[in-house]
Image (cartoon, rainbow, N blue to C red; front, top):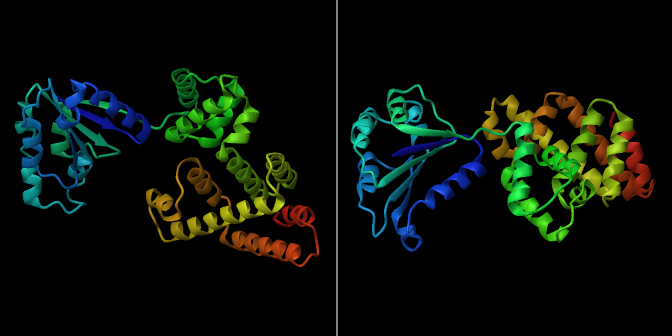
Length: 323
């Protein structure tokens, strides 16, 4: 049997892989009967040999290959030789008669289904898709995860978690486990989430910068007050804004250099919700505005350092100046 797990939802795919691994029994020989291969490096002989191997004291064998369809679907782009491509053209014939004791699991973030080899493989496969969850699906997933972990969140807390963290399911799972320990069986409120989840603070930073970019001074001050209520000092908020301005500067530069969106996150070391917000903000602001904001942030730091204004006074003036 060939199973394809496809999609950008790394966390749900990893959980599905764990479920499939459990089908290899008995547990004490599970690891011996599971092989993991890199699809970019494996050749067809090695793959077929792994699949054809008789299970060792178990009822089945599992072979996991990551990125094979992506390689085969983009063979020309990735420089796969003509002979190499011909070699993989035998895949459908060879694997049509694979042993019933073997499961070949192909794990793919994305691939092109247009190629002849890939389309033939897909016809022989069971395909399970794991796209990024839409907002309503994300809320439902968090509710289900809470039930699974035995932790109770009020609806406002769940919405706040979804808004702040976005589709980073692994991070949400980690935060829920942390909150379960903290709550000791009590209902977790939105205030608890604001206190415990770092991304909620980051969301308020985005609100400050968004409001500044759009000239909404009162909203920027309101979002800043929320951060102060969470225990942040004015100087700490300024550092957060500085950090976001740097991200915007670097993002705008990379986009001007025609850097693929998929590479920008890696280059500036951002992912998930923070990356998406940064890409959204970049469209709203000019390079000149970014440089102007950077200059005003520098001037604010100098005012405080020279004792001309207190931290709070300089911060309030800065928000007004950043319009």
